[in-house]
Image (tube, rainbow, N blue to C red):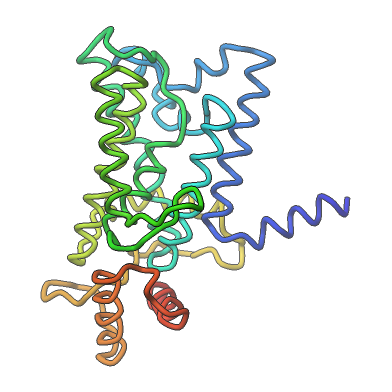
Length: 288
């Protein structure tokens, strides 16, 4: 009992990014176990190629994101999701992060269905599984929102996020052309496009994900404690420079000047150039 209580306590202490990683990981493991007992489970919840098979099991446009092809597939997806989530939650709300992730999964599934319907027989993979489209949405959002920020790859070399994004797009385009997991790469690119477009519009003060906010509203409740749940829906909150055309309440002029200065610093030198005080200030501003 003490072990279980300790696990519950540790889970409660995680932020939304950590809880999402735990949720997706545990769901994947459950599907693996069920698949050993009854193999067709994977086919029921994975996304099949082609329009008609997908329409016959429409839930798979969402559930395919909770299956993975193996331990490494799950590990790398969750590793990237966790770190991009930490970065995104420093500037944006949990609602926005979750909405972007789950919208990326659905969009990636739709892109796979469309491409596999148009190019029948081309794709080597007849079933799409994995949360990669949602992960790419969050990753490319961060890469586009703070492109100059360096990250350390494999604990060896520092690479700016924009170059990481270029490399991943090149790899996926190559995979599509050579038909090496072409279907999965199509889903990756769809998620990447969503992340890129969302970030570029967000810089202009336009939250294009607001139309999908209901997804985030429903999902956020799964990862927040009862004491922190919202009792009503509210618009998604963003830290961005003041625009002339905006209906949102403006922060005080002093705070807005500091936000503008910090965002200029991110644009020029990357997120990692911020001091701890500046990061904390942005995080609090995003929650106000």
